[in-house]
Image (tube, rainbow, N blue to C red; front, side, top):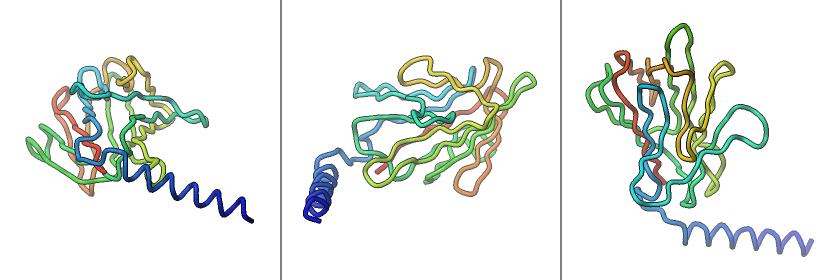
Length: 173
């Protein structure tokens, strides 16, 4: 019983320290950009730690974006050059991206995985979608011919003209 109490106290102290010491400013994690030609999800280089994508160690197809700063609680999503306008902005915790190309299509869900201070951005493809890490901070989605078709975010569906548009994902705490 005493060991359990000590473990709970230690866990609570660690959680408080993490929340007090980890950066929490809106810009604490770099922006990710989902862009066309070929379709890729890439971390914007702004001179700070970029983090990296890693595939799930628990099986499955999901990839996770790891970064030393505290994990996101929501996203600020900016959809550019779509049927939603030249620059539509949404607050969300999940979005679904549909892409198409020469005879194939890809669906990925981008959401927040984990709990409390131990959250990360999760990229979860459907069973037919191929994701490949071409650099530590870059995921290639589908084959070379695939482009953005639409995104569903915060109750809206935005469509793209083939080869045009992009999606910026700002990770906010």
